[in-house]
Image 1 (cartoon, rainbow, N blue to C red):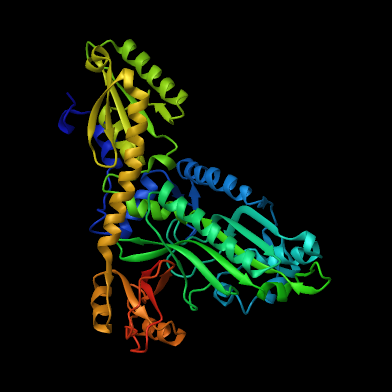
Image 2: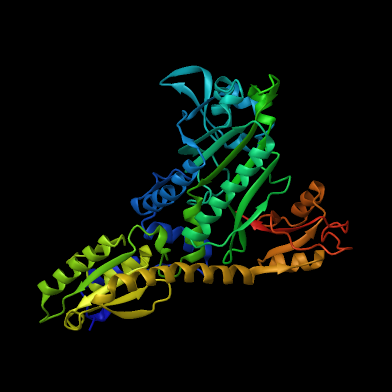
Length: 503
């Protein structure tokens, strides 16, 4: 039987209080998010420099798990890893200025070495097209040099204006960026969708976050691309969409700027077709926003570096050594079965404090073993996602724990999808649009697909929360019945598009 707070020593009560969240997810979402990413030990703020964060081991472990899925998959596609320098020559960056107007205010510059002013200013990469493509021009000469498919795992610096948000909008972040060159548009188009499917897998199969595969509007297309595809998530608590990752067909625009030409099999000169694609540590932020609760993180088992935490329960008069030995044997058994399990052997914290810590960090399963469990040759398991507890016979432990983890993974996705789907509202008129927007919905509306109309929607919906915009047009398009009008312009609708506020 556990102590009540009034019976505990003062320092234990304080330790447990420090682990509790001050803010509630349903009451003050922004403050809840800022608090939970710190208390769960995902990040620490860095020396009061706004927008810079220390990614702690708990966050990096998740990033590595995503890497360990994605990296082998792109290698199957014959993509090779490389690394280009962080610095961009100013003349190279200016070559793509008309494509990257959105980066102008975000570019950070190095102008001095010590007290000496540099002859040529160097930018810290906001993206790597202007770093990599001069060398694509050098390396690609003929059709035998194609396709050239490179990827790098690196950091990016974008000096965000406004209020940075950990993982979602930070001034430095980690990502992978792939850059491919092909002899034909058909090859480029095929890769765009192949990469997009991998991004869907990251979100839905690893992070248990439902996404919509779609294309971005002309306004939201990546600068210099002929089209951008996205996996779009939605955060019900904030009523905002979030671009999870993008896969872009750049066409021949950058090839023209950087003279990336080749000679085909018939001896004819031509420009390559290029793609760029990437996902970032934003993945972690989206997962926290979707699954976290008032106790902290809730991690899907596939991305949890610790899937099972085992806690001994040696109460008074119990066989303490026998319980500890059994806990150690349990961890060993699970680890040998490729389940990421660890033992909490800390003797300085109370049981309540331990439970709160692992709940805050979102570990999917907590196993407790006490004297009764030892006698009955069982363990007691607690699910983090829904709080359910179950006794499991030791003889069936590995099989039952694997099934439980699979069930948690699927259940988390199903719950998240249900909540997301409840936020989707189909509308046909401007008045319906405004009403749904005020209710923080993800809005599916018929649209004429005109840039001027989208800009007008943004202008008409400006508010403290930010203007509404086209999130994406789903690749899986609902049927547009004859006579369907655009919700904003009244012109004939050409497609269905999701709209809403966005991070």
